[in-house]
Amino acid sequence: MTRVVAQGTFDILHPGHVHYFRDAAEMGDELHVIIARSENVTHKEPPVVPDEQRREMVAALKPVDEAHLGHPEDIFVPIERLDPDIIALGYDQHHDEAKLQQALAERGIDCEVRRASALDRDDPERLLSTGRIIDRVLDERGD
Amino acid sequence: MTRVVAQGTFDILHPGHVHYFRDAAEMGDELHVIIARSENVTHKEPPVVPDEQRREMVAALKPVDEAHLGHPEDIFVPIERLDPDIIALGYDQHHDEAKLQQALAERGIDCEVRRASALDRDDPERLLSTGRIIDRVLDERGD
View: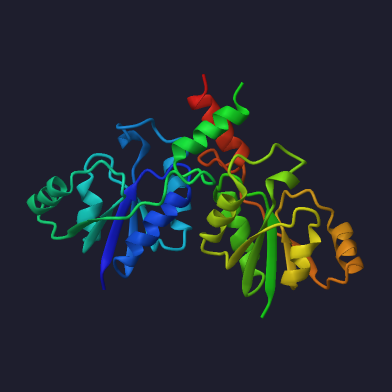
């Protein structure tokens, strides 16, 4: 039984998220997703959709077994609790794999860090980021 | 084998959509969803998300077996092809059940029309319509 953990903000869902979850799910038998709380999203604008609603929507996707909100202070708390075999990073997530592996080792968490593949973000027919969906909303519905 | 069909625009997904699909799926064994093409959305503003991306996202949800784009000219064409036992209307969809039942009968489509239940749209913690998500985007990210 190989448990995989994926994590992120997942504000307005798009096919890039689904692709990430499919890829992560294929790395093992059971996929758990940790959803960043809005208060902890500091490297980009805070999400539009409330925490619990983002969790609920991720949990409704086929590749996902369970979705959990992150810990407000310590990102490693849910990782320790879930005790995954693999952490699957999104292809564009700004994490240094070696540093993350080292931080996990220091916390006594024995798991492998892998990176999911990318969907073609330049696909002209799809809005493959929350930012592109938000820009489309502002273009079409803004004053 | 009871086949259920649900239909709608499903622009930016939210828990109200998931609730509708769960409810519809529970009416039978197999849920097919027909996604309105943007060109046919005339009773409200056209969707922000492209047709095929909306189809792809609906197909990724757990209660949904298959998602199909609607027919550009005749809404009954996919219904005839899918030959459902039940058409599940969303609780807030502006269709007159008796008139729809009659139109189906005139086309020789023998199926029952039911209505799904509502999620509590006044839930202050959730954005239970695409319109509320769009308003939140405009409030938080607009100029």
